Amino acid sequence: MNNPYQQLALEGWSQLAELGWLRLKDNPHGDFSGWLESIAKLPTGDGFNDLEHGAPKLGRPAEDLSELRAQLFKLHPWRKGPLEMGGVRIDTEWRSDWKWDRIKPGLNINGHNILDIGSGNGYFGLRMLAAGARLVVGVDPTMVFVMQWLAMQKLCPGLNNFVLPLGIEDLPADTGCFDTVFSMGVLYHRREPVEHLEQLKALSCPGGQIVLETLILDGEDASVLKPTGRYARMRNVHAIPTLSVLHEWLAQAGMRDVKVLDVSRTTVEEQRSTEWMTFESLQECLDPGNPLKSIEGYPAPVRAALLINL
Image (cartoon, rainbow, N blue to C red; front, side):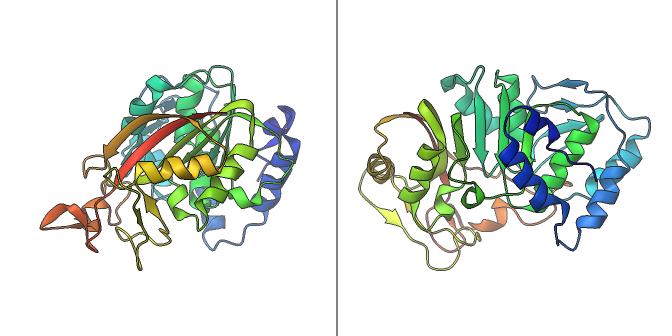
């Protein structure tokens, strides 16, 4: 396997590139060699892309679409998308394009160097490039998502969109600063939410911005849901605040210039099982008799996206 982060090093982020490569090349995951074998069978693209779509196009249509589809399916489950890779349409679990369409009108990321915490396979990085970003560095410790990104790189090399197999806690204190830092779907998984917000701020340039997307509770009071066990069948959901509490957390982290970009209830049309993600999805996580409740009896998922100017 060649080092996929050489271009990132050439862009001036050599420390991150080396850290990502060290974590990737000797990965102990049991499926690692099989994933790499599937990626090796993908056609090598010439850099053709068309990112101005809800399903970004990566690579020209392959000669053997059925073989390409078979190899891409071996990287299941595909959660963030949709995508069109080598002419194969991948209908992912999340209609991530809907989320992007909700927040994009409030963003200005033209020319920005961007850090995306919990990036998944890099789908949002593709949308950020289409919106004018100069470079996107995603970090996500889930190895299959990094493999999906490697597949994208094979079909469409040269994009300044990278996914490193790291978590935010793996980033060195002197990582450097980014014009915009995204944290979408991460905050509620952190035991210390204010500490996470402080980390985001530390990774941002002075005068930069943070895009925060997270679960919230409906209501105007100062409530925080701390689930016992799972929430909507998700593990490690530690705290879900109302918007007022979330603003308090942001203030504690030194962030006061906050704009709410969107508040939306997650629907079974936006998050669902597909042929590319055959496991249970949101439908199975809701009370079958009351879709406004999770299967555990908690309020069903509502998500807010906020823009914080530093």
